[in-house]
Image (cartoon, rainbow, N blue to C red; front, top):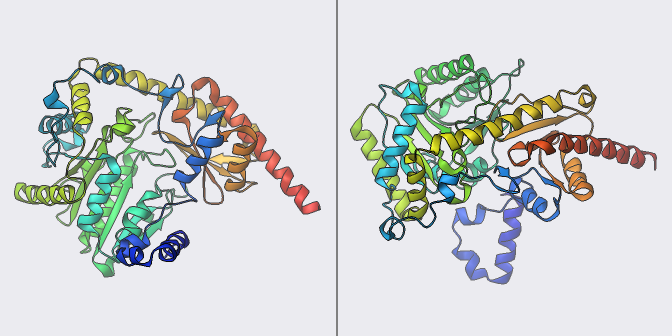
Length: 439
């Protein structure tokens, strides 16, 4: 049991042992992470009065980036489209619109059989549903070592799965498809594995190239042909934010009909794609050649939704539907894409300055909201706290060496200063260490 979970349990037992006895095993295992992104972002919210590069949203002109087509519609709808409960699987028109969007943006889905997207309360809810439906205690969750920490809560703590990781990058700084293949095959004795593919990746901001994508599909097919049953979840939270020559679509299309032993599940949403984080609108889509199987999976998914949140919020679904159908939607979305791409390109331009070579290198990135520095001379947590305490700058420390920077929420004109101050802080932390040794 995690130390934080035990501490909470001890407090509850001391204060009221009857309440403690009411907790389920899951309730006793769950905790609020103090070492991770949520708590570090909370600290940054209090102290980061200059730049806050912790939270995974995009900012523009000191406010959350948004599409005017959505902002203009907040009071434009009939009561029936706002106040009624949405169906458990989501607003039917929205499900159809999102399916059409998937088809237009993922050419590899042409001619493939897949279900109607089911509306979720954003992406974490979709992941939770898949965990409930497909993960038993002791099952193996295969994720790279560069991953979103919430996977461990959703699959590890909630469902008591075994988290298996492999190096995200190979020796050529490409996606490690061979490592993925071996990690899955190592679980052959269990006969089953759950694989999560997250591109663009959080925290690295990396999306594989076309050949890497083929290698990923081949690795999973090899494992299936060995007799393993594999649930493959594509976490496409940052879908569409592809800034360079990488895959420009989800691997969900390639996974569809890849092998009878592979069940592909696509989890995506308007949350980050359309810059509406607080609206909490996500989607879960299954792929199968059998309509009966797709219908059965949808019914089971609706059962989970009914038993937990009953249904998602109707107003936000209405707003998203209106945006998708608006003639200005694509133009406005492209404007935001250009801003995000410029920020990513400028980050690379700044980091390619040779003066930084002695203190860090950066992991390859080409997409999404984030990038990661690999620190050479100081530990990430010491640097994070120094940035907060002395410069009011928020970042995310991941392990001993990695510092995640969300360039999505840093204005273009501030990027050079941000990394200059991070560099200055590295030097100051280095000097602190020297002084401490000499004392």
